Each structure stands twice: as structure tokens, then as C-alpha cells.
Length: 312
Length: 299
Image 1: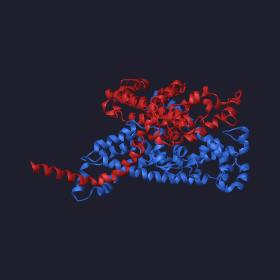
Image 2: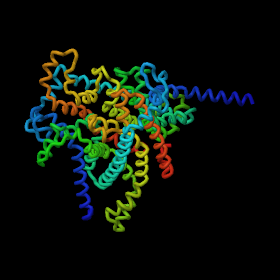
Image 3: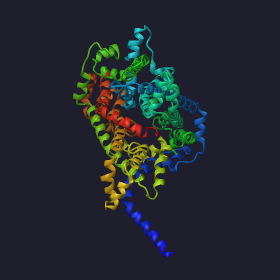
Image 4: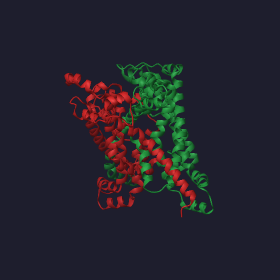
């Protein structure tokens, strides 16, 4: 018995010695993960405290749910939640539809030009949001913008002060989001499309199916699992927004907050511009927790539909 | 062999794609043209595709003005991107290799710890307080380099699954039996076999560093000399005069102010910000498609 035990512990020691270099290799990455992702987690308690920079996170007094009460009694909580969700719904519907349509069109084309198209529509995805903000500014700037100075002038209309009229921004932001992300999403669908069995299409052609029928009865049904999965993933992220898009593109203009403020921009402004750390933390906790539940829920659904595609 | 329907379809396909291509490129084109427009013309007629008068003055100003911060910020962006890619590749590859190792005690727990960061994170406030009060990265180069960009859990898992499927266990085991230690098997066998994924991850990380403005915006409050080109662009959007606010050069600043081609210089700088991406675009495009295909569906 004792011998078996000592053999076992000897074996364990041997495994450990063998893998020691591996653990050493992994250490820097794990330390980074700890610093960047795990160390901040206890800091979430600030949401339940009256933060005082002098006293630090742990010295600040507890206030229970007060920060959340303040947050939800103002109209802010409603506006930022509404904006975040509605924009994401619009992005999911529009960007997915466009990406699939473009992928189908591209998959049927041949030759050199196909690559040119693909390169061009992917390009916006590689620009920083600051630069996208500049591009939007070149079009919408009140004094010098292309739209006010050229298009509206040619139509004989008065210039519009774009950066102080919130009603235009849902359209502008949805357009910018599509401009930025359709090329990227399209590649995901295109990669899936290219993997389909060509013989389906050949036999459909022999049976006299038109292009439209082929798309409707072969391509779309085959794409269904990918569409469902990517959409579910996006629904899981519905409580998060692209900070750059909502902050940089409308140039952080206060007049536009009613249609451009999302949870992420609210948290940022609360922390670094208003100095309202606790309130900002409360909004952050609200986002983290609801977001986490949504991610898990979406994953459960994906798992039910297609086990292999689920993250967990 | 082509039927009438094929021809019609192909015609409309090319038509639609040509329109989309133009839509994608036109804003970028407007930016390049504006940067080459005469400043007075621009202020008078606005941003336009067909300026009355062309000029390269904005670029001359950027490259010759002694009080200009542009060159410095540009250099900073290159240094940051290079350092960032090296650090991020080292961290990601080593961690991913370990997680791919069969029989490694604790492997599943560690993989879950990496994965969990994709599901839940503390958000901006605790992260900010952690980095500024514990690590004091505020107004240092580390503020640009370290927070959130240095290692992405997604890249780690992407690379891990490549090691698992692309590097056969038998080869590693054989090398081990032949007397190579774990360092050697990784360096001499696993890494050379995984060049495609390493290139892809390097590229993802390089783009992320080059385009990042968030870290500088949050963590650099006084040290404007550490600005990357993105941070400078961001600052100039609100305040073009910041270009001459170089404390050492107050006399020149007054002189420079009157000469700044304020409208065009912004676009010239934005164009410079895009330039490196354009130059390596063929490389990016090839690997981007590969990267998305490798892991995009999971992401």
C-alpha cells in the first residue's frame, strides 16, 4: 500500500518536473490576466459605496443601494438602456441582412474584380474610430462639410446644423456602423458559403432551378445555423456598445446625448468628466450583470440549437 | 456555356458590388483630397471632391514646422505598435501553448480562467482605479501599452485551438522522447508549425495598437508628449491650436498659429494615420480573411 502511494507521488513529481518549464512559460500571461481582468473585480463594490479617492476603495463608506436608486430615478438609466438596446437591435438586423446579401452576391462572382470588391469593403473595418470621426466630420461639418456646402446647396436647401440636432443621429450612426462592419461580417458568411457542397447547386441547375430559387432553397437554409449562431452571440452582447462609435463619431456633443448616449459613454463621462465615480460604477455593475446574464442565456440557446457552436 | 440568366446575374452582381466599393472608398477619398486642397479654398467651399485649388501645404507644414507634435506622435505610434506586438505575441503564444498541452495538470481550470474574461469583466471604473492607484500607469508609456490591449483572451483561445489541431501530438512526444525539453519542443517544433496563426495574431494585435486611442485618452492627462497619432488627432478635433502648444516654443507658437492650415492639416494628419495600414493592406487582407475563417465563427 505504502509503495503504491509513494509510486503515485513519485509519478506526480515527475509530471510536475516535466511540465515545470510550461508553467514558467505560462506565468507572464497568467499574471497579465490577473492584473488586467481579475484584480479589478473586487473594485465592483464601489457601486455600493460613496467613493472617496482619499480613502480608497476599501476605506470609503458603504451606502447600500443608494447609487442604484439615484441612477434609476433619473431619466438617464432609461435613456441609456433604450439607446444601447435599440441601436444594437438595428445593427443586428441591418448589418446581418446586408452582410448575407453581399456574401451571396460575391460568392457568385468570379475573377480578379471579386478580390478588389472584397478588399474595398473590408477597408473601413481597419480604421480607428477617431479617423472615422474625422471622415464623418468632413461630410457633416456645419461650416465646411460636404453635405451642407455641396449637396444641400445644389438642392437649394438651407444648411443643417448636424452636430446639434439629435434626430439625425440614429440614421447617421446606423449608416456608419454598417459602413464599418458589413465588410467584416460578410467575410464570415462568405467563408461559410464557400464550404457548401457544390453538387447541390449542380443538381438544382439540372432540375431547372433559377438563381433566386437556388438562393432561397439551398443557400439560405444551409446558412441558417451560422446566422442563428452569430445573431445569438450579438444578442448576448446587446447590453454593450462600441464606445468609439457613440463617443467619437458624434464628437461628444452634449446636444446629441438624447440619441447618442449609451451605457458605455455614460459610464465614461461619469468617471472622467463628471467625477461621479460611484454613480458611474453603479451603471457599470448594472451593465456587467445584465450583460453576463444575457451572454449566458444566449449561449444556452445556441447550445440547444447547435451544441458545437456554443462557447460553453 | 453561359446562359442569359447568368449574364444578367453577373451584370447586376458587378453593378451592386461596384456601388458598394465606391461607398466604402468615397469617404476615405474625400479625406485624401481634402488634405491636398488649398486651405483658403477649403474654408470657402467646404470639403469637396473637386477642389478649385490644390496644395500640398498641409503636408509641408506637418513635416517642417518645428513646433509640430505630429512627427513625434507618429514616432510614438510606431514604437507603441512594435513594442505592443512583441509583448502581446510573447504572452499569447506562451500561454496558448501551455493551454494546448495534453496532460498538463490544471489545464482545464486555467483555460476556463482565460475564457471567463470574455464573459464577464469589471468594466471601466474598477479597471481604471486598479491601474491608476495600484500600478500608477497614469501619464506613463505603460498607460498606453498595458491596459486591455496586451493580451486578448480571444487570441489566446484561437491560438490554443490551432496548437491542438495543427501540431500533431506524436511529433511533440517523439521530440520529448529523443531528449528535447519542453522549451525546445515548443521553440523548434510547435512554433515553426504554427506560423499562419502567429502571423494572424500579430496582425490583429498590431492593428489594435495602431488604432487605439482609448488608453491614451484615459491614462494620459498631462504628458501630451506621449501622445500617439490617434490621441493627437483626437485632441486636435477639439482644438487645432494644440498643435502649437509646445511649452518650449512659446515664441514660435505665436508665429506658427497664424500659418496653420487649420482645415486641411487635420485631414493630412488623418491621412497619415491611415497610411501605414494602406501600405501593408495586401498583407493584412490575406491574413485577415484567414484569421476570420480560422476563428471568426467562434468569436
